[in-house]
Length: 339
Image (tube, rainbow, N blue to C red):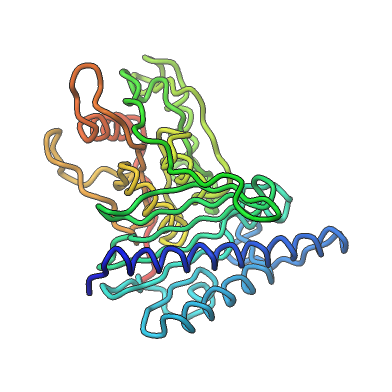
């Protein structure tokens, strides 16, 4: 099934309005929480994998609105997936909405503003419309959105009480990547919810990766990356959105799910960024093109858009070179989907 640009624009506008409605719901919920000075939570995997009544309420609001407007479309949501018995990758080629009602629930519990509502729309398993609304950033929230299409675009809006204060295309053209990247890059990564402690655990490997990327050039047995900084926002959605908007250079993530990245991935792809597997594909040579990440693969390495550099290196050449430099400095992470 194909969609015209006018149909995609309608889907985009619908998702933007829906994300803002969900954001107002969440802002109201937080206001009530401040008055009550409590927020009931329930653990899923462990004490850092939390769900609240707000997560479930926001997902229901979004799901009901989508099915009322687009009853033939499929829907994948974090909370309904977590509560269901079917744990395989559910995305098919038909039009599908992939939703994280609250990415950054732990942040919300602590009233840290890096919390996002993510709404993605896929066609043929490709993120095609992406909307990410951060309801606690700016006066009344900040909205990032895109239509991943040759005639589409990517935008950022900050909202006040009466409506958008700014409504601007995400900055283009972006600068080239740093010449000696990853040196000079801003790197985003998350600790994740798997906190098991062993020499080969994902947590131990992630810790090693972060130190490798931060260490001086030549350090750590030649793995030092000397990035400008490591940022861990507690929201994979916001990590990728900041890379998409050029406010970061690299996002290295594993262990999250398709709803954590789908909306932001559509934005990143439209701005000219790339998303590949954070583990190098087995057997890939130094000259083979690097394939796009599998949306359901739970491992994502995102590189921002860039312009041709002073030596004439094209954007994709710079991006793939940086991917390979990151792969050299990071250990393979083992995150599998339930069968």
